[in-house]
Image (cartoon, rainbow, N blue to C red; front, side, top):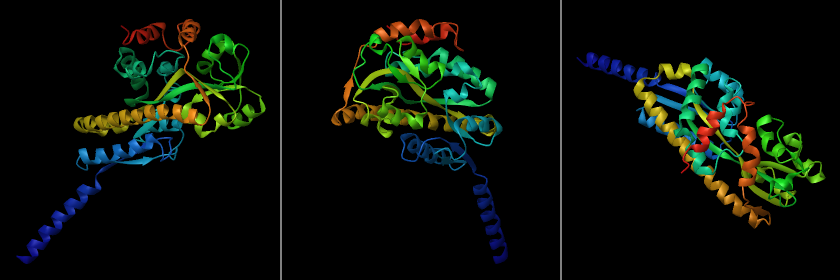
Length: 324
């Protein structure tokens, strides 16, 4: 009798161990370091997924590009080598170019306009097309930040940019605004930008506020113009092979958690940008709010042409989004 009891207990324990060993461990890859809001919310998502799926799934977070560049991760998702990835539109655009539409210069009226993008028909159309081509599932769009201009003098109108030697990434979508304003777009490696500004090789540049702070460009630039000329975000993707093996219930749970994490990270980044404006002013930097309409007027014809991978109707639909 005693032997039967211990035999039954051993079988039960074996079943528990076997069940635990079959928990599905998902790999989540992002480029950002552990100190970032993006990483913090990825860790939060990992905890929530394990809790809400009652241990059926766990997530291991790999930050700082440990599993490869975003371009490599985008490919790894399709092969089942990575389960979840935070990937920028520029890398996704190598597979489906129109997905980069949210980077169009002066497309967004304000932050609320951009945050409404995932509710639009255009978002649904473009992300669905990307899903069909890639096999990966688009779960969420996280706000990454706006790009602004720095210089050693106020540049408050398009005319003020005429002939200004301005460092811009040598990518067509990034050059729309400076070219339309008549700036002298000058290629400089990002790693050499601080020195180029210090020596006057270029006299202006554009980047998000956290980058301006982290790279100390404010040490060699006296003015920041809050142009908000480009608004960036990255997508949360689940690879096709991973999505296919999830039950419908767990697809819903994991999607919900990752969407909540995207919203949390977006809120943190938005707050950090607001805090940075005051931080720069405390450092003695002139931070200028300007009338964006003249810039919109000179850029709008360019982004409505047929020279882009998206269609003009997509831009028109987004411009109308939320407008009264």
